[in-house]
Length: 530
Image 1 (cartoon, rainbow, N blue to C red):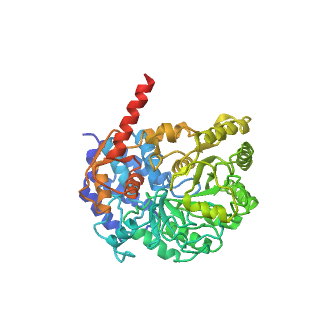
Image 2: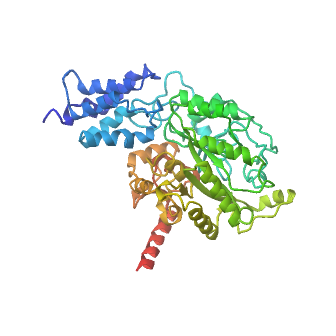
Image 3: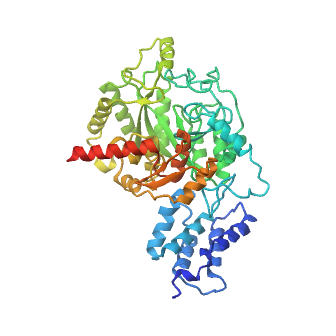
């Protein structure tokens, strides 16, 4: 055995790793994350001061080249460390698989894990022992009971931290003064709608909201996608902006690198943008809505919103142009569509997400009360409608508007928010809602080829990881298989439990019925191709 082999590293021993985690607990929170990597390096070296293995060189490179941080000084998010740090070092130093695993552990050691979930050795598992002095905001079982009693879209108005399709929504007030006629909260399709008021009510302080997040058994530090006021209000309206900023700053101070999304039809000043740019850990994205909707339907603040879009795109923030909502007959003429694309082109949009209108019978009364024409089309309650014909016209006009722009410089255009949010960050991660398992439906617009490759190579989870997540659902005996590019769950789970699994594994998760449908669909496609 030569000096360049893994045999010399004690960090392959789980007991040594656990002991190292315990010893570092006294130093947390770490003001210098490189200290954790240096401690791991010294543990690897043991008593030898001259060891010069491949692994030692890789660990030294992390410290010397400040690889835990981007050039801007922002922290490289936990989920990007595998592709941004570990994989390049593994290739440069020709690390063996066991060495790669040790290197990944050392990088994970440099992160903080507040709350009831996660550690450097098991990032997705419930903690066996809570950190000294930490007291969860509410017992685990009580939180899960409130989540399972939530409305049909997952909104948990009793706890105000909810697992939803777009991620875990953290809400500090319910109600929105913008009064969009199509708002699906307006008529109460979930728990009490806006609690009978357009004015934000039911306020909780930012610190309390973050404490509730940390206590939620479905929240994973650095992994769970988060939305602020994802489905209850506007994160940037004056009534809620102070709490929004305080919550972001609190998560940032805790060292969390989770993706956090804010969807808005409002705007921020340059000073407010600068305050968001100052975040060093939280991985924030801003989704600015514009779809040339008549001002009788949406609030008349179009000029302010488009000015914000332009200024935000010139900042260091991750910004998505949200071409939403597209409502058949209201903003779907060729003139409307052309106006939107010219607006995005002038603003310099780099990633655009399309989305139809979520509309149901409950909204008919709202539109009629405003004296507005009803959108065209056949709507399924809870589902967004964007017809294939309208989508084709949108993309045809896109090609016309961007005809003078070289193909590589044109914006990406996606159908799903989660797709847009990974593309805007540089296509380092697979779509966290795993839409790539149906590429003919979800990946057919303008998704970059690099993102296609990342999604296609999403790592297959281990059974241990799935069991860690099932334990957090308090379903430890749930049966599952991992095969055919998906985790198939063989017992009944609700849609938001499946979302929780998918967003932590970054991998498709199906029920038995969904798995059977996908097999049938694949066979049908093969038959058509013959």
